[in-house]
Amino acid sequence: MSSPEIASLSWGQMKVKGCSTTYKDCKVWPGGSRTWDWRETGTNHSPGVQPADLEEVVKKGVQTLVIGRGMSEALQGVISVGELATENSEVLSFTS
Image 1 (cartoon, rainbow, N blue to C red):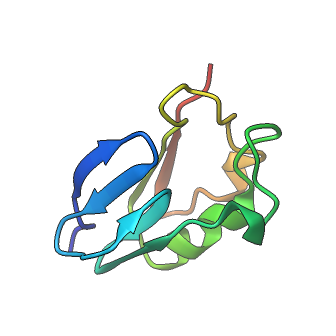
Image 2: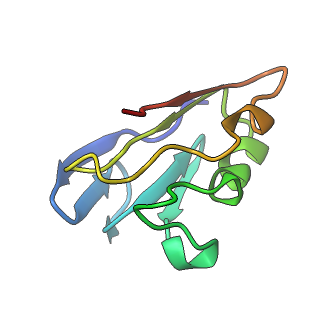
């Protein structure tokens, strides 16, 4: 099973194929998607994405995890991304 496709992307709006919700930020994984609420883990443009933000999708069995940096590339990279890679997955992080 593959993750749902991003149907459209513009400033502050993401639509996932097969989902009626319009997201500001979202997480997708094989079989689902949900709002990515940065407040859950303290993510902000700096220091960036927190490992806890990614654990949910890694646990859902993704094989490749791609982390975008936002429309203006203001979101900084993942802290300790190496901790998230498992035997069956890899993490691709876009950093400057």
